[in-house]
Image 1 (cartoon, rainbow, N blue to C red):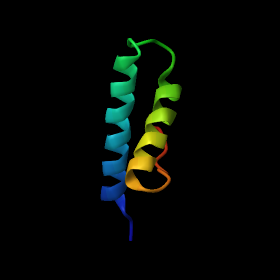
Image 2 (image 1 turned 60 degrees about the vertical axis):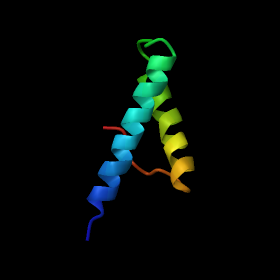
Image 3 (image 1 turned 90 degrees about the vertical axis):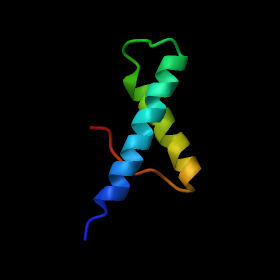
Length: 56
């Protein structure tokens, strides 16, 4: 049984956080991976564990 709703929810949290971080940094180009990883770590900390959602 797959847990896609949790994965989708976590993925959406990461996307929103990465966008927020990107905007705060002045919307720089070419740093998507940096913001994604920072957001993933942040969401993992908020959720009490590692976020295992891969960037697509």
